[in-house]
Amino acid sequence: MAGTTVQKRTHARPAATYPRKRATKACHTCRFRRTKCDNARPSCSSCVRLGADCLYAQADPSTFDPASLAILQRMDELEALIRSKEADMLPVIETSPSEPQTDLCSDPNMPRKHSLIHIEAVLKWPVFEEKEFPARHYPGPFAEDEHALSESANLPISVNVDLPCAESLLQSYFDNVHIFNPILEEEAVREYMKMVCFNGVGWDAMSCLLLLIYAHGSIATPFSNHLDGSSPTTFHHSPAIRQAETYFLAAQKRMGMLLCGSRVIDAQCFFLAGAYLVATLRPVEGWRMFVQALACCQGFLINHPDRTGTEGEWSPKQRIYWTCFKSELELRLELNLPQKSDWDLTYPTFFPTPPNELRTKDEAAWYYYLAEIALRRLGNRILSHLYQSDMASTHESSIEYAVADFEEQMDSWLRSLPEMLALDIPDLQDTEHEALRFILSGHFLDCQEMMYWYFVENAVHYGRIPSATAETYVRKGLRVCVERIQQNRKGFYYRHHGTWLMLRSCARSAFVLLAALRRPELASMLPGDWEESIIDVARMLEFWKDECRDVQEKYEILDALFGVWRGPVYP
Image (cartoon, rainbow, N blue to C red):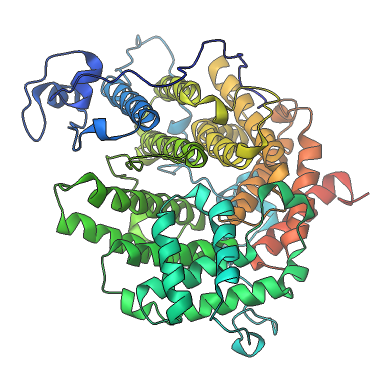
């Protein structure tokens, strides 16, 4: 990945097992700091003094397989390190009375409390003021389209499937969808499938879950085939989407009985429904499903506030809880919904527990899942620290200090990845896990964008940069915009759970580059391949524009902005 220090891993990895750590009653923070823990509950004296969350092990880790134990230990140590460092972050910076203080936030023309990282905020920057772009977007399909997918008259396919067809759809789901969010137990789902095939589709939660799996399986394709994908117009008239919509509508009719439940399967159904809607570029409808899934998960804590119970009982709840949390949050922040809880970034303090025995094919998916969660937690800390606080009273050098610290934390995360998911090994010949690395790279760039957004935005707003460090961060922020587009090229035409978010983030990066181009003092800082990157985004949006009003709107804006500077987007 461009812009990342590349170091070939030379250390030997353990061939068989990891050494088991001695059991201890100390909290995670004291264990990591190698200090004596007084075991006070709910927080020991050391954690109280540091301002860190005091967490105690809830289950015996010796029941995990060695690979699971190793990654959980590494994640816990990284989390403890981050929390202990945050307690000592941002010291008071003293300056002499004669020393001038440079503080962009003191500018009276900047009343913002925090920066909003979404397209609509960028299009409202002063450099685009004369364009008078709409304040809000319309993130949804063309509801008035006469070929709308929801018309049941166009969906005559039966929901009763025979065993071979069911097995094919199920395998498609586990190969292409489940790997990104391992919330289901494959063996249990296969038993469900056999029962439903022999007894018929019922009106229970089990049947609802299988219908949603069949909907995903009907449209899911391998990541390696994304370049051969059909256009949205062709897709919407294909037998695959008609079959998928039939399954989805049948599942939808069965969701009413799940609304008052707090079982794992209830949350799983709502999550899969949301993932399907987002994959078909219906983000608002998908967000509603994620909210309902998260509401089911909140019931887990009400019934078990101390999270006690056996490992097998709590583990599936952890998995669906975290999956719903991160999916709902990502959509909520991007949709910029008008609600007071937009900046509620509190996250669960636990990591999901892997199954007791991981088969070889599941190991990489679990490493990916836990690494993605760790990155989501880091991203939330960045957002909370840099953009939720009162920036008007924060000194510029304090923000620079915080960004430097977050850079170290991201580098630690990068080094913690197993080789199969490594982002810092060039030309890694491992196509089997390419899709997992693709998603992780995107989230890694999200965190980088969060860190540098403050400096890029202020540079574009005021056309001045107060320090050499700030200039470095502006250059890094503009470089991230280009890297995001380059890294996502391989997935421009791949339909999955995160397609809409990818379209939005890449379009946002293109608009930031065009905003910098309108500032003569920033134009020279643009990376050399910025122009090619914007052209690629325009082509990507043109591919998807007939499926979603929001995408069509952004395509037209980008074409107008870039066309004024360069001429027609297409040669």
